[in-house]
Length: 272
Image 1 (cartoon, one colour):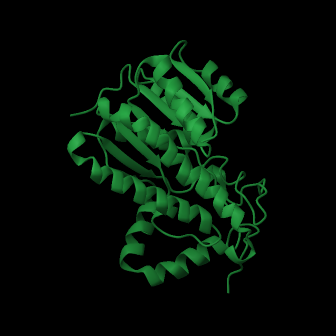
Image 2 (spheres, one colour):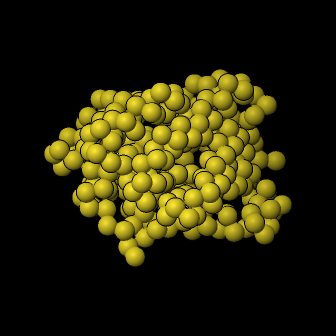
């Protein structure tokens, strides 16, 4: 049976831009009360001004900080009285060869992408179970197929998916929906904010953002997945083919993925 989202409370991490901001609009269009969490309070407040009055709340929070995750859940429940959906969307990427990369860069990605999901889920879970709600992880095709030059990103998304799959199985009797959505390359600021080998943002996307799926399309797929009790959503034809071919022809995919990413502007590795 399709889930009605009218008057449900949704907490979205990484809500200040990209997929997170698009999700805020998509859930609001269904009559949801939306809690927006991110580090950039000014961006959250700008987003809030574009949403229906009285139906949203901003929380300045860094998901890599456990206390912030506890506080944002407490504020969500305190503001609206319940929590029905948690969207673990906050994330950061990287682009550098592992041999050149300071290990602290991978630690930073794990702190945000993986531990941020763990912390937020830990504090939200009692409320989600009470309401037979939905736990969402915004993962990536990189959570199915390791991407060269993005070791930390792939590792964090593999870890996120393993965590959520385990949690889904633990709560089979409880009516908890655990959904993983894996966009392919999506037009957002995640590549311009990606970290280089020293932990600095690269500043400019190496890909043609205009040719990618929009954040709004991803958000619409995500919200429909919540409504329809989906388990896993893999987006874009390229993404679906990557997952399929990697399962059956992994050695071939090693070469195909390498060649594809070697064509990026200023690629950290050259095609040989």
